[in-house]
Image (tube, rainbow, N blue to C red; front, side, top):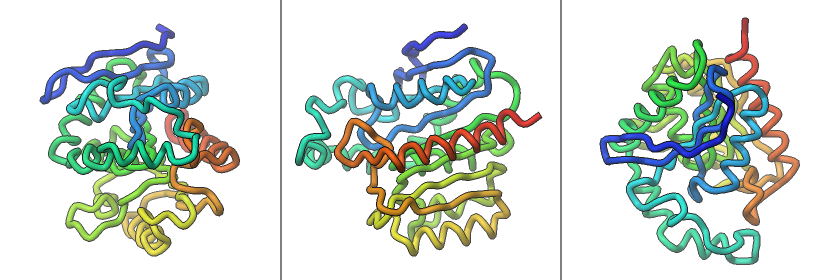
Length: 249
């Protein structure tokens, strides 16, 4: 079946909506949204990935806080100050509340649903902003199932917490591509270096790059942070990763 549609997925916390796009039976990709959430922009990005020959699931990870439409920005985040105003409206509280004890069971439901639509073989994940943390945790919780992880303008991949995402890499079997925003306070250069060391120590095939001049949020064309050059670079590297891993053989 080749359709784009909204699904209702049962989680431990109740029903959650998700966007599914692409042809059933194709390799699966789990798309973790940025802090702004499931909206037209992330649906369009998923459609583009699906056009490469994949079936893509984009879950509404903030389902405990309201529907995707209720939480979506009401104004144009490309206008001066609008993005900052939106983030001051409680976005960071939602991010902080989505702890691993909640996101982990949710991800079980996302993976299960994607596998119902995807073909045989490993799946990929791609995560934006805080979604990168969810993508890495998905790979750690599903070794052998998640074969590819993309992470772009991510924050908090390296922290002092004992379960920091970078400490989980050894539990995964995935290949990684990270594209970090330049001078990103949520992922400074020392954290990028620590991530590189963790990837090497885990023996994971990877590409871990800083996109010079690109701001946090560079892939999101509906915000003032958008950088077309960096966004297109991310799509290029993500497609190469997915094709290498999910279409191999």
